[in-house]
Structures are given as structure tokens and as C-alpha cells.
Length: 146
Image 1 (cartoon, rainbow, N blue to C red):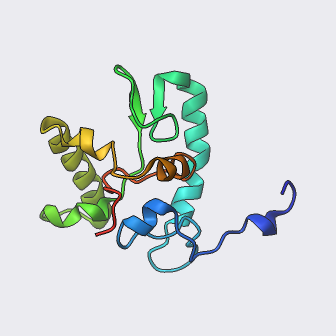
Image 2: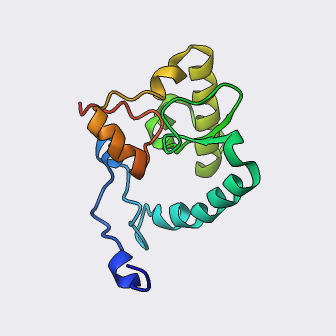
Image 3: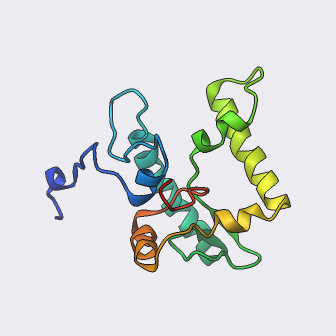
């Protein structure tokens, strides 16, 4: 694969397991179209490497570093604000501001109610956990198709 960029171009119709389970989630290869997420996803990857190099094992990349976050560690997890955006009034926020608000509000509420523990343990099989450990998982996607 090294040096063969065409072989790594991706297919915009391909979905990770978590994207198949999260209604409306786009592929990480969904470039240059309405609702694109690929540019944000791919431009953020170097920052994750930078954070890992700066903080080492003090930061936990969920679920890549494991499904359980060690006590006293900071965690970085993928979120999809559309999962929760309808639960909160838009008020006078822009779309991006509302996304940030929704994530902060939902995680704060989930932490206080112990629901965060369930969000960190999606209902997926051991085989699916192995796949998600490579592909990643969106926090709050329960796992089972409904």
C-alpha cells in the first residue's frame, strides 16, 4: 500500500459499523458533498497524534485504548451531536455553537446520572468490539439496530 494513494482513496458509500448503527452518520470518506465529514475527520487525525505524543498514556483514546477508561485519565471520544441535538432548544446559537452546546450538555447530564457509563459500553458482540477497536465507535451509539 505504501506509495499507492489511489488504493487508499476510500468509498463514500462505505460505513464503519458505528455509522451503520447511528442513523444519518456519514462515511469518513464522504468528501466534497453536502453534509461532508471527511475533511474534518481526516484533518483532525494529525492533532490526535500530536496529543498522544504530548500526553502519552495520560490520555485515553476511547475505544482504541480499550473500552474502559482508567481512573484519573482524560479521554477523547468521537461524538455525533445529531444523536442528541433535538433534545435541546436551539435558542440563539449557530449550528456549530449548538453542536458544541449539545455535546457538553449531554455529557454533563450523562455523567451526573451515571448514564455515561452505559454510553461507554455499547451493546455489541465481542467480535464487533474487535472491529470497533480498529474502526472506532461513536459515543452514545447503543449498538443494536432498532
